[in-house]
Image (cartoon, rainbow, N blue to C red; front, side, top):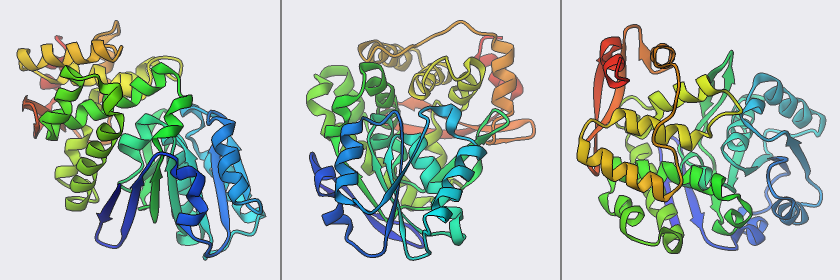
Length: 334
């Protein structure tokens, strides 16, 4: 399946196909040299498969995990690109999850004022959500994604076969983003998780999620309006991630917690909780709620004492609402 993404400055394809990683070079083409970026959490099977297609290319591998999403890792990639004589005509190819996509994408955006970048996501989280849209960023001083750039890829190759080497927890972690997509835009997608054997619909789940992301990004590439809907659950979610640190909950798990805190409609909360239980995702946790409130208001989306949040009063119809600190504390039950 092919999805075309049209932004103000670029049009690019997203190919969704099982086994497509085996044909990556054939599809990408051979113009210029390539520089490969991955991390040590990606199964060596997939790294070897890509490296065999580009035997002349160097593969920069960094340590897996959110802790690597920092200026030091970014600079190390840039220095390695320079050492291997990457030129403005060459291409960076990312193979991995969201952190790899962020690091490789931001390196491509900043190296020589921007070079070609191709994303090959290998996790459910990156295939469903972060592989398209052009957001690239690193964390700084404990604040997620506060330094970065919008840099659209030139192509995205999504191979669901790569999900076969993920742990169950990592697979389910990414599916939280698909649940989010259903809640804000697609009731049918949400109902797959409610009523169907979702494992038999995985390719459809990825496809429908990517179409939603594509449609939103095309209308609002720089997140000045509708794209903010994609942040549903993330305002509280990012606060939970910062609070629990790198050894706590995964990103999707924090988004799940954030969605539960955000929804006020009791019927929808109950339906969401049931879906989260099916996916073995958390719906509540023990934490210092006053600290969570502080972290929410320190989010990069906050504007002094106000922040724009996403609310769902009807499944499939997310809306934007501006709230203040008192509203945040109320949602937390303070």
